[in-house]
Image (cartoon, rainbow, N blue to C red; front, top):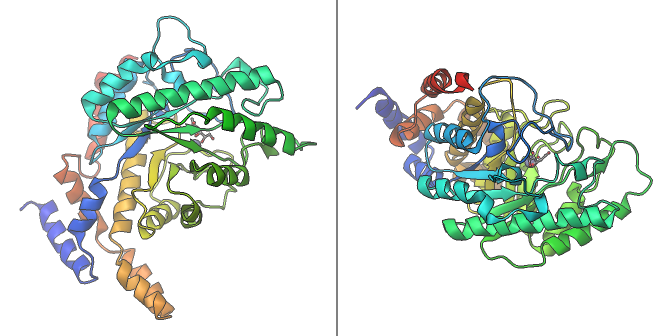
Amino acid sequence: MNNIEQAYAQAKERYATLGVDTEKALAALEKVAISLHCWQGDDVGGFENPGGELTGGIAATGNYPGKARSADELRRDLDVAYRLLPGSHRLNLHAIYLESDKPVERNAIEPKHFSAWLDWAKEKGHGVDFNPTCFSHPLANDGFTLSHRDPAIRQFWIEHCIASRKIGDYFGKELGTPAVTNIWIPDGYKDTPADRTTPRRLLLEALDTVLAEKLSHNLDAVEPKLFGIGSESYVTGSMEFYTGYAVSRKVLLTLDSGHFHPTETIADKISSVLIYLDEILLHVSRGVRWDSDHVVTFNDDLQAIAQEIVRADALNRVHIGLDYFDASINRIAAWTIGARNTLRALLNALLEPRQMLNQFEADGDFSSRLALQEELKVMPAGAIWDFYCLKHGAPVGMAFMDVIKDYEKTELVKR
Ligand code: RNT
Ligand code: ZN
């Protein structure tokens, strides 16, 4: 037995005294597929219009060398990130990551523009999720898309979203695992609107048109937001708007942890929305002041999100994607750190002595509940995580940075 196995054996015994079966926790974690967001690899640039400006009230800051300049480079970078994660995981693709010799308008995108992504996903065993790109485009420049007052512009974005759903369905069918196609639009006003209702009515109608056709390999999701840069005072697709929409239309609601008031977390929302919805999508992110998209760290917020999914027995109802873009550090490290943290948080949640905690609560023994919650913070979960990485051939501890540094030297610096 090596050190990691020894430490695991000891930790396993300690968890057993709390009634926790570590093997069961690991088996549950093995089934979790995190959807890695392709857009961390090139600062949300995409390959439709290289060098085009990122708009929509989101921003990637930093100038770290080595960003992917082509889909091939992006796939190679992703391959490195996936190797550093225990388990097998998904890819979250945006429409602007299409590949084509000639320019293709957004409302004319087709599955064929994503066939290289499909081949790659098939070969590597990744499920794929999809997103229409309703930003970084001249017809989105005045800040409105699906809720635009001009019917022609609205129609353009409706067609883009329909085309995107069909691509999601194509991936879902070809890969044998449904794609979640998530609609996020930036629509909103910088300053106080006179009429908050009209854009929302337009959005409702537009979404109903977009979602009219049933597609059996595609799951639809809608993503609310409180504000963006340049849409500080009003966002058409607010939490209340989309919660009502998702419940009434039976689609998924997306909770992005960076999309609420700076002190508001999504953890407490999960058990509420899961009462009304079969499935939801998470965009795990980290808000810092004005930015909603910092690399996910192992903070209280992340742990609370993981706990709420596990405590609700909802690992099979919650699709977990990452959503952040940091251009100031190695982009593969950004993917890897955020994804490993998310998995680690889920593992910690799976290692909770749920029965014991629930019993204390049911008995009204809140002193013991608090005492145990605090003791759990220093339980040897790290030893279980290390063992999990070892078992799945993923680097243990900081060793993943060696791989990244190496790849940086041999590949990224040349870009
Ligand atoms: C923006 C939303 C959205 C985007 C991606 C690129 O605030 O979170 O999900 O980050 O679609
Ligand atoms: Zn998001």
